[in-house]
Length: 106
Image (cartoon, rainbow, N blue to C red; front, side, top):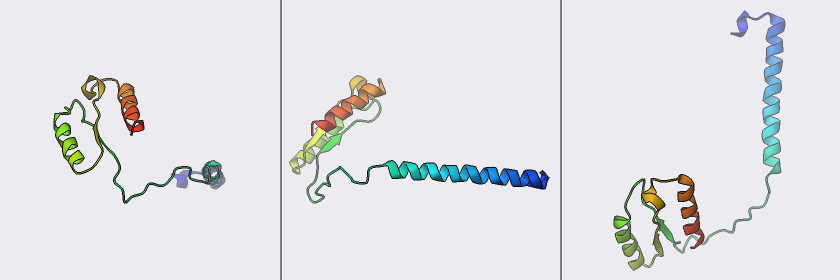
């Protein structure tokens, strides 16, 4: 592709490509530098099992999940079955809000 260009145009294309590459590297560096340095999320004790949210798949039923939740509770875990609106086949925004609400209640 570049072999068909005149030497002066080939140099121009390589210089332009180098400038674009430098610009991309500078943009990535600026993005990384602008991120906060400290992690504000507290670490979680991994020796204690956390709560479990059981969510049916697309159009799925919660019947089998109720059985699994009961077994998890018997084993000492906090298990919650989330029932999605419209059986999980409706508006994704509403389903996401339902999942967010369920996770914040934990």
